[in-house]
Image (cartoon, rainbow, N blue to C red; front, side, top):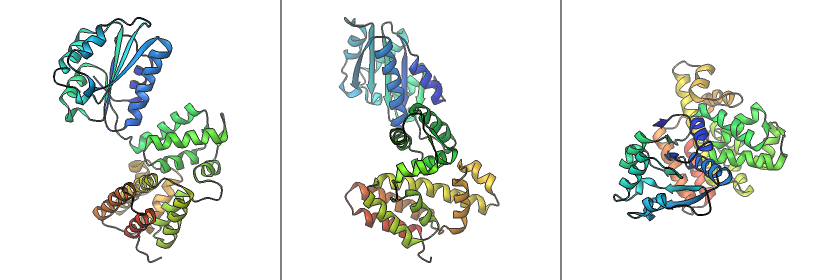
Length: 332
């Protein structure tokens, strides 16, 4: 039973009871982790269930059946959490499917995998039998909702402009967005209302390097200023992988905006197709005029090389200089 909305699956995990079987699959481990935590919290804190955790490769024939049938001596039941369910051995798969078909009494299951049903036979079978949510990277249009949800959980109220900048900063990476919200909450305190300056102060530091400035310089085709900004960010301690993720997300929006404008579209069309709102929308419209027109394949390859470079020990300034040289013309 495929669940299409994250909020629906989260409610299922938060309100699960004995006999529940939920599956979270797909590449976005942040969403999967939240769903797992919600279900674990429900069973451990409210229902007094024991929690058992396994990687699917650890389970041998008979193990799952035994864990499901054995009574729990000191608790009301068991929640069995199994990761990498796509790796479940052939002899164990029938045990799982039989348990799902027959129903569980004083036990429950939370199953997860970074794979999707087209990549795994057991996932395809589970998708037809139990609530099943695929954790894909969120669309741009989903990010305001996520920002609102995470801000509420941290009990802070960022302004509309601050939210847009946080979304831009996160590059559709929910872990990055969540970490930023947590930093804001720790710095400003519960109940704080946070404007743009209050957000920048935490993300970039007082008088420190500004990752938004780096993006502005690259897509304004200002090569020298972009290299200076990258160097400042690296000295300040900004995470190189995060910098690349932010720039890649912004680049995707810029090239999409350029395509839309070339086809005769304007602000409304760019906003609809990219999910951008003020102030990012104004930036994108400006970048359609100023950004260096680079072959898409060449730019994508440059981002891939940069990602590999920072993960394999290549000098970080060299990595970013090469990326910046690819994305700019050096004429300004």
